[in-house]
Figure 1 (tube, rainbow, N blue to C red):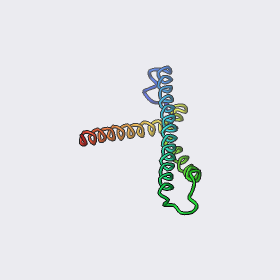
Figure 2: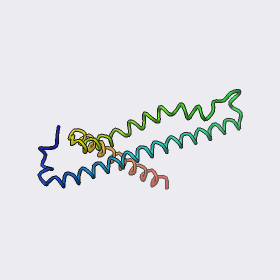
Figure 3: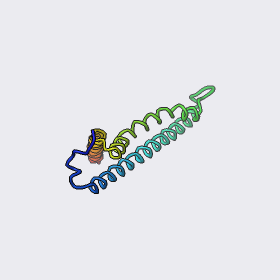
Figure 4: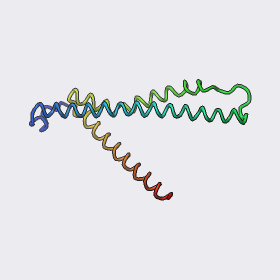
Length: 135
């Protein structure tokens, strides 16, 4: 479905182009955030596993051949790739929806972004409530 019949275009082509650039920019920022946070999470998992393996080797719980850190890193790559692909779906909807004037993709981007924002606000409120309860 094309956006040609929407009231948004009554304001002129420049207004639409400004809005289009904003949606593309927000989509790009969200994609960069998804890549950065996914990579950081993956690296933190690797560091945690390295520490766990070091502790296990110290107390000699593992007898014989222990799996190496490289095995863990390689075995987690498919999960990292799949998670990254899923987290890039929403920014891709915004990017392609704005570039190709696809209202269905833009609606998906808007609704998913709203749900994500509400979830983040709820998580922040719960975290503040937990911190206030600890003190």
